[in-house]
Image 1 (cartoon, helix red, strand yellow):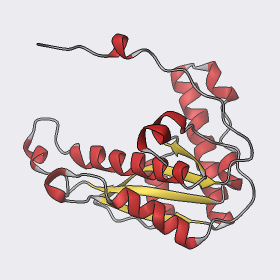
Image 2 (tube, rainbow, N blue to C red):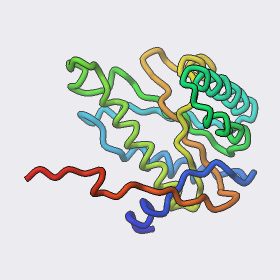
Image 3 (cartoon, rainbow, N blue to C red):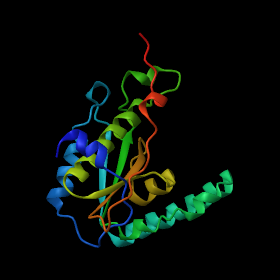
Length: 190
């Protein structure tokens, strides 16, 4: 698939068929993530591949608690309609972790290390595009409590779970979401 076609066609998918994904395909998607750029080539990402139904259920329960807390804290009633139950039936969840000690020169900046998160975001985007090119649906999911996920998955102290990449064969085509025009989001300085 041509790159710009993949970028324009890819949509988030939360409705998957209950079909396994071959390990070779999961590995191909992770390899695409590994090809992302990173500061000083630190490659701060690690990937935890989850197919266990019991672990997916625990992740879903944690996400539900996180959602309830977000609604309570923010007052965003619309969030009540947002279901996280798809986490239980997603064939594969790839937890993307970032290593805070592999951030690059930004560790000396006032805000501290952030570039490791940016590198992991680039890896996630590569994985989402690769998933689409291979005919899979995917979603970038971040509604979870990091400490709970660290504990559940025995993630090292210096690593942070940043996102779940949920993968599967789409049960239906996802609706295209609107994007704001480039002119409203871009400033050219000559």
